[in-house]
Image (cartoon, rainbow, N blue to C red):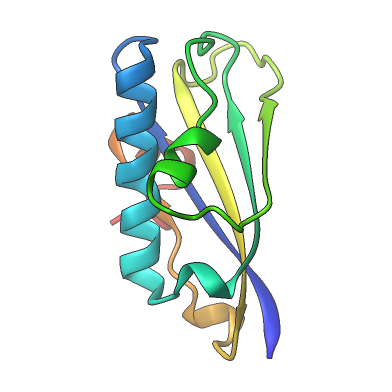
Length: 120
């Protein structure tokens, strides 16, 4: 079994706790559905947010989904001129037998612009 990383990102319209949590849950659910893993398969999750998101920790959304034993950590994304505002990024490390090329990364909303080559 290997540890593989799954990348994802989503944007929100405004910095509001309910929007941060709902968008993060939407993203995590989409990542889970695309890659068919269980919470028990997750080694850890790293979240980053742009500096214009301050109302909530996106990790709280994972806890609300019942992912209570998963190690979670939140960071602030570096500020780069012209970057996408109000963006939540996620890196999920899972234990899996899948090949790296079989991992499906998920980019939703305006975050599709981050990786047009991977966005659906």
